[in-house]
Image (cartoon, rainbow, N blue to C red; front, top):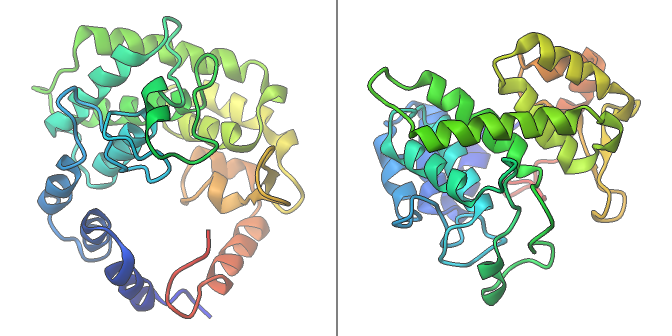
Length: 264
């Protein structure tokens, strides 16, 4: 049975935040981007970053990397590379990044506010670096000629990109969500030839069914082929057979609940 889109939309209307409602209207019905951007702006801080539980696992009002990444992904999905929030968010990320370009997972200030047990600061740059480097390179490349990122932002983006390539030089050390974010980077970075070689080097991680385990996750938790390569045409699709993608789509269809949603 195919996914019941109408039922899924009703689930979002019944349970989603205003932001999710506007995102869905844009994606499904071609609604204007302006309501998405207006709803997103409510989570923005004066420093250019985003907080206020935009990422529900970290409920600090202050700007956080995970919330800011989610905001940038919303801007990308809304088709808004020219919105000033893009450059401002990129500048905030550049300001909190480590000298080598790596981006922290969680900032220390989050500890004083409600947060999920796994949302704690870690040493050095995190897997978020892959995601930021990929999506910001893509967004800034699509921006109109009059839109310019600050010099400090572009300098950080070069360091972050080098951080990603250095991490990918040891593909055996990547796994779980780190590998997922690495594929996000490789799907977006301009150097297609280098990206293709790096994607192929990750093939040994992929199980027979197209999934990978999640170290430290819930019991038997795995990321599926659709988690790792969610859309047709991505470079990362080279890792997966048509049968693996088809099986993933079957599981997606079968996983829809009676209320129109899915269990995560």
